[in-house]
Length: 319
Image (cartoon, rainbow, N blue to C red; front, side, top):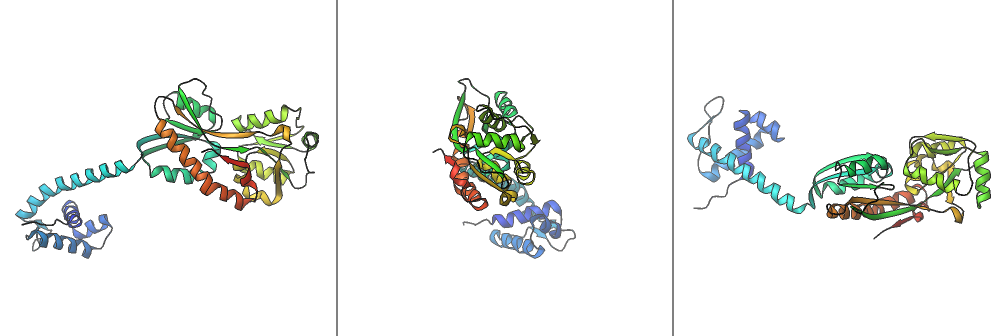
């Protein structure tokens, strides 16, 4: 004779035994007490035996119930292990220690991490500036880093570009238009330059763009976030050099600012790199890069367009 064992009923039975009452078992299983009782009755019918002596208070196991307890705990353990193995086979990898640069953290990280959680059994995430992220990668504390300025130059590291963004001139609507290096030099001498107070890779690159053409600001306001940079550009009548992702972080203030391309001789892009060990973690690098590209294409470009039409045009995806 074949008997179809009800796993839901078995779980209800084991939970009642563990917590001694139907009411407490129902709370643990997040169902009603009647649902627990019905599950157990269904299990008893499928087995053709009674598992509890219902005349006793508290409930007591029958001899069949005691045998079921011994075998049932082992069976549920096997079921849990089987489910874990099946789920693991659908995941891309078991563990990933991921470092996110500041720009990624403040923009695409919710959508990127949501996708990664479906692919990685144990995902650990750190965020910070490129230099400390590079050091963690070098010391083996991280497997993969996604940032724009990782300081890793020897052959043991594998680099894959995900996307790149053009640095834009972001300025208050009260400022005169800028179409030449000379125009920008005049703006820098008469209006505050809004920048980051940390030596991030983005700030180093923005400073180099200006200084390479002899553009030096007479007044500088340094803050700690892209949101604050865009906000001060709007409220303090200043200017900044930012890629689209950083502009989007200050989208609350975009009605009071305008953005445009820099003069041709000053145009540069920021590449977002996914970096990991060349001899280990290639699979992880490719997974993170493909998902970062996917999020930028499917989510962020639309976010940019909604916040400031045209902003999305200054992003290039790497395939």
